[in-house]
Image (cartoon, rainbow, N blue to C red; front, side, top):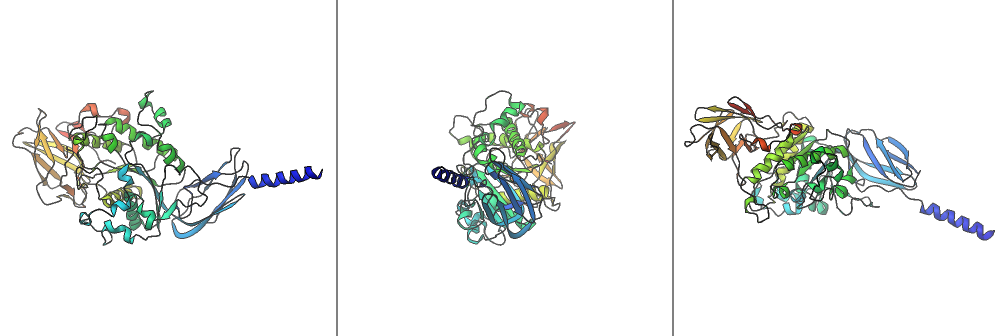
Length: 504
């Protein structure tokens, strides 16, 4: 009897010791920023039936783990706070997460130009930074970055799905953690903080060289009727599953996307438009919010035509891909920045100027996600054309304070064609709110193209320093998307006028 009793006591003590402790996903940790103004989800694993309590900012929510050990609670929306606070999650064990702030959180993803680190940024030629940030050269940002209200989380593909008992995924944006972090994401956060004056958290989840397909789940492709039953190559879900899915439903304000070079090398056009649409829709579904802003980067100048790949590319491959990127602006709450002026070496697919990439993305967010009506977020966007004698008059939206030639020289990048469809270099000049385009050898012009070359770095800007978006007025109907996904910016013929609308 004594042996049996001793065995029972030992078994009881052992089972109590083995009872599963609360485990948190890696995105929940010290130093994190929680999204203001939205319900806040917290989740993890514990023993089946275990009671779990979450305490933060005078809120206390309790739940029980289900039969598989999963649990989740939701706190009510909070106001922004830069006061470091403690978040306590308790059950069998107690986890105390320190230095938690409340503000704005953005998820930043894509390929190498989004992954481009602050360490690389520090090696850029200082002379390329013609505009200083806070009176300092952005190339030197690592030497003075010390704002405790900017927090960063760098997704590691192999680790995000694994728990971290030390809860150390988030960091203040400085020192070694910042060195390895995305430069576009950091400079975006810095510009947001400068304008909003609330804590900013940015999550970087990017893979160099990645196509778009791995960032979309297999289920999203299957559920999209556009693809039917066709098999999608490019390894769907390869990066979505380990690098995006585990982040939901951590509350975010929106998404930033800098990707496309790998798909441009495949000479994609409307197929990429549909894939990006699928990605946006599926990510919003994962966060259960179809209104989440999604802002992305139009590709910069690069000599794609000189590549030695299996797909033969031309000097128009990049403009056509940019056009495909533009198609996606038909989706609500989307925006795109133009980068025709942000390339120093056309044989370098990783141009510097990431501080300006981040700033322009922040302008989109400020103007649209944060309703800052005084912010000019985009450069001139072609709206409509009208034939006037031997010239074509172009009208633009997003004029800002007015049209300018950035370098004070005659406008560049314009071509004009007659009904034969042969384009010739054109003279162009600003006439108030319009641009007049003509060529001596094209007496009866019918179409205009602007920046329609991979190497084009035109000088038409608005006075706020933002470049005009590339366009062509003669877009072939075969390249337009179906009625179910028709872009707001595709040309519509109206007598002698051809018109496009803004991205909004």
